[in-house]
Length: 483
Image (cartoon, rainbow, N blue to C red):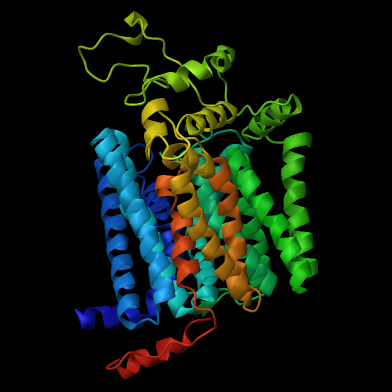
């Protein structure tokens, strides 16, 4: 076993572990789309997706074990890392006891095991191997594989000829998933553009790297805009604001960051307020802003009578789903929804979801309604991780996890003040901080677990890793490979 862990620890490909934790599942779907196997869901796509993610999760777990064996983790890092895992394990056990093996529990558990936990492992591994710069290089290289899909989507949106879901999806990849697929590649290329680094692929340096990055940044950003995913808009704009502020504070690439951020913001505003091709989904942002102007947080169509039923919904039993019921019966012989006397209340607007979460917290402020209890009851998660944490785990869980997050953030800020690429990674995560407050689900939000793993395992001082005893001579050179 030691030999296997040594190979994992010394592998020159370890620098790709964390970049893949942000995109491996999405890239698998994109690859199957290229092969013509993701226009509709099928057994080939499903099998390939499962096998790919299981393999990645296995490698990530081995990377964590290799870090524990050969890394320099001290007790003050091991303790909070262990608490993170104990927190989530305890919450899943509590949910299982409270609600049983429901579809919600199994779905969340599977997502956590194959997406969130591998991201946590990759974060710990990168913190010890100091692969921060290689993280952006890896994402940039993977972004080239997603570029054709972005071009296809952009073309379909411009000419309004995308046949999937009224022009908004790319095969089985829905518009929201597609926009969040492109987001990490976009952000990584922004950092690479600011630094003006060479653009390499398969060991070959590409010509005119800055021009290529400008083209890819424009392509990814316009494809994201075309998708109409408002959450990604806010994530990228929030990232741009933090990027400009950090560049001014540290006096690095101030002009480039300001010009690039202003250009991206201008393109978004132009498509929202001035003109956008018919196939673009920017109309969704206009409707949202119209609601905000009236003091309402409206993100989807909803029965206006729902607001009068919030108190009754909160008082209802939370052991079964009471809203967002399916329109068709789950069993062939079950009565149709039209024949049922039970009213099917459909809730999707963020404002309503937030109000329900606040009131559920007020009902049980100490312990909460139970992990995943909100989804079990309302058929949809709150779309806001702090509110989800409060209403489902109460102050007991909220304070515990927030202290761990605060600990990780302090480590990131302290190291990032002196180390540029740690600071870049923190800025990269700011986009996902925005996502956590507008569409994230606590129980399988991979960026949060990655940030906790990396931030809590990050050494206080920059240290160089040395080869483990017995490392083959041909692998020793890989220790100089970290950028």
